[in-house]
Image (tube, rainbow, N blue to C red; front, side, top):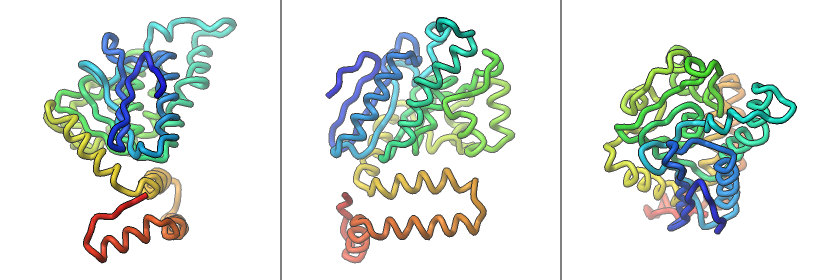
Length: 265
C-alpha cells in the first residue's frame, strides 16, 4: 500500500476508509493532500477487494477547504488570480474529477466543521452522513470575494434549490447538520458517537451490493436535469439494456426468487 503524509488509507473487509489527516489545520487541503488523495483514489480504483470508499476527517473537523497559507504563494509569472486558477487546473479539479469518476460508491462521514472547498469534498460522495455537531459553511463569496468551487456550485442548487443555495453562498451562514438533513443537502444526521458506526453500516451495505449499478445510478440522477422526460426514459431504457446483460442482474433475479442474499460481483 502507498505511503501517505496527509491522509490515512485503510482497506479492510471490502471497505476503503480514507481519513484526511491534517487535524492541526482542520484538514485543510494543500498540494501534498491533493497528491495523496489522487494516489489513494487510484489505489482504491485498482483494488478489486475495495468495493466502497468512505471518507472522513481526523480530529475536530472534516475539512476547512483549501489551505489559504499555501494558496497565498504566488506562482512565478502569474497574477494571484492566475495562480489560483492554475492550481485548480492542475490539482483541485483533477482530484475532484477522479473522485467523481470512481466506479465504486462513495460515502462521506462528516465530523465537525466543513467549510469552503471541504463542502465540495463532502458532497462529491454518493451518500453523506454527518454528526449532529457538524456544520456546513460556504465562505467563498462573503469572506474571500470568490465563488464556491470544488463542485459546490453544481451540487448546491441540485440538492437544496436555488434559494437556499444562494443563501448559503452569499451569507456564509453556518448550516447545522440537522438543518442540512432537513434541507436534503445530506442523507442523514446522527449522534456524534454514532457517526462512524452508522457510516460503516452503510458502507458495509454498499460493499455487498452491485457496484456497477450504483455507478449508473449516480450517472442517471446527476445527468437527468439536462434531459427532457422523454430523453430520460430513453436513457433509462439503454442503461437497463447494458445492466441487464451483466451477471449481477441474473444473480439478483435468482437470489430474489430463492429468497436469499445476492452474491454480487
